Image 1 (cartoon, one colour):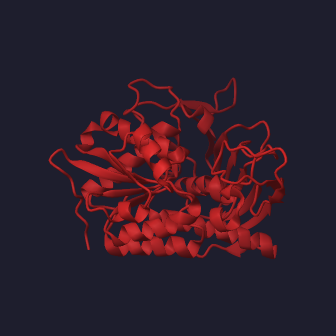
Image 2 (cartoon, one colour; image 1 turned 30 degrees about the vertical axis):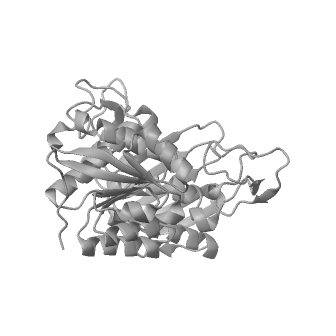
Image 3 (tube, helix red, strand yellow; image 1 turned 90 degrees about the vertical axis):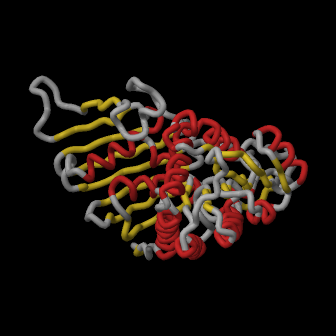
Length: 396
C-alpha cells in the first residue's frame, strides 16, 4: 500500500528521534537547516518527540535539542499517531527492532548505518518497508557530497572509460588509545562488526554508488587492541574508564582490508581502520579507468582531481583540479560561489532533503533500506572470507 505523509496546514513532517547520542545532535542540526537550505521542498520538520533509555536522559536531550516532548519508551514514540518519521540513532543492536516496529506502524524511517547487525535482518527491514510502502533512508552521509556525485557522473558517462580499479579508505584514530573503555562499540552482539561495520560501511556504500556493486570479496579482519578497560555505564565515544578497571576482550575488528570484484569487471581495494594513529579523519577514494582517473578526499571536499589520458599539456603531465561549485549536484544550496568544503553536518541536510523529497513525491529515497541491506551483505561476505581464507560471493 502507499502511505500518504501526514502534514499539518504548514506542511510539517513530524519527527520522533530515537536515541540521544552524538548523532542525535547532527540529525537535529540538519533538521533545523533544512527549510533554509532547501525552501523549494515546501515542507518543514517538526521536532515532535525524543525517546531515550531513561526519563532523565530523554528529558535532558529533548530540552537541549529542542524537541517538544520526550519519553523513555521508544515503543510509545513509534506508535504515536502524531509522528510521520521515525529517526533511529540508537546503538546498532536496536536498529532492527525499532525500524520494524516503525514500519508496522506505517511510519517512514531514517536509520543510521550499519542498517542492522546481520544481513538477514537488513533484508527483512527492506522487504517490510517495501511491502508497507513507507519511505526509508540510511545514514550513508557522504553519498550526497557533490564530489561523490560528480565522480559517479564521470564514471557513468564514460569519461573515465572502463573502470579498472577503485581504492577507498576510511582511517581514523578515534579508537587508537588502548585506555579507552570497552563500550558497546566493541561488543559483537551489540555493535556487530567493528571498523568494517562502523566506518567500512561508508566506503562500501561509496564504491557501490560510484563504481557499481561488489560481487565477491576477500577480507582480512584484525583486532589490534585486544583488551580494553571495563567501564560500567560508558555509552559511546568520549567515555573514560577508571585507572584500575579490569581489562575485558574486544570482540570485533579494528583494522580491515577487503579486496573485491566489481560487477562491471574491475577490482576494488578497501581499508577501514579505527586505530589509525596520525589520522584523525581520513576518508577518500580513487577510481582508475581505461581513459583516466579521479581522486576525492572528504577532507578536501571542495575538489575532485581528474586525469584524462591524451589530454596532457605539453609542458607538464598531471591532474586537473575540478573545483566544486553551484553547477554541481547539491552544492548550490550552501554557497553561491565555488571552492567551499562541505562537512558532515551539511551532508546530513542533503540526506534529510532526499528523504523528505521522496515522501512528498511518493517514491523511493536514496540510499534506501535496499542499499543498506546490500552493503551489509558485503560486510558479512568479507567476514566469512576472513574466516575461510577464500574468496566469498556477495549474496545480495
